Length: 288
Image (cartoon, rainbow, N blue to C red):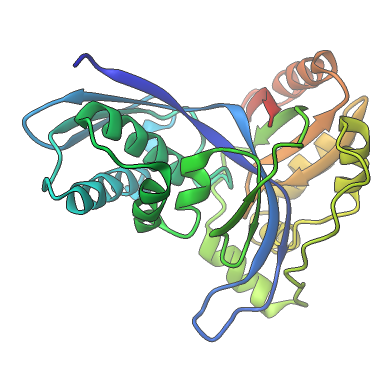
């Protein structure tokens, strides 16, 4: 079989409500997650053994987490399927920033799992593949499915949300990593939120959904800004964009998303940010 390629889309937490750490060291959460039409690119080819090569604008920044997640997922797949380590050559074209709050490593692993299933001719349904994806962490199944969903528990209890409308957005990252562990430690030292899942919006068209999202929050935003002040600068710049409807940090940062009514407004805002901050990573996108 010839090489197969797929997008590993960026994950965006439209809101993220986080509760106090539990006795096992985990934080309960509630989130509505969407996926962008931009991300990393994964290619798999048949080979004698399992290998990974990384290229792309953020390849040099990858300190091991992303590639380890791909390899960990594929080894878990081989073990579950009883075939041992799969014979696949994997190429990761790293287009997303590292430690960005976009689920990049888990999304890479999810895309690799789906491609490997096809390449190897494995008769594994999505439920079984989602179970295997837990090898990369609690957000493994979420990023494997790459569909709009409510996430609860540790991020592993999913309810798909097909009613979410497309949202025109700009993703902005200052090219400064935001280490998840440090953000959660800062969160634990401050006033803590609750992992409350809010009632859904009254209507699922874009306007009411954006208004409803404006009433939600990301409980990790303040501690992330404390740890990485550059995120605060990005938030301030995004809130000053013409016609912006909503600005929020995704996940534990450092990426900020800004939502607009139209793709034209989003594209114009992205161009303005690129001009003002050529050292930042900026991408207009559609979240769904």
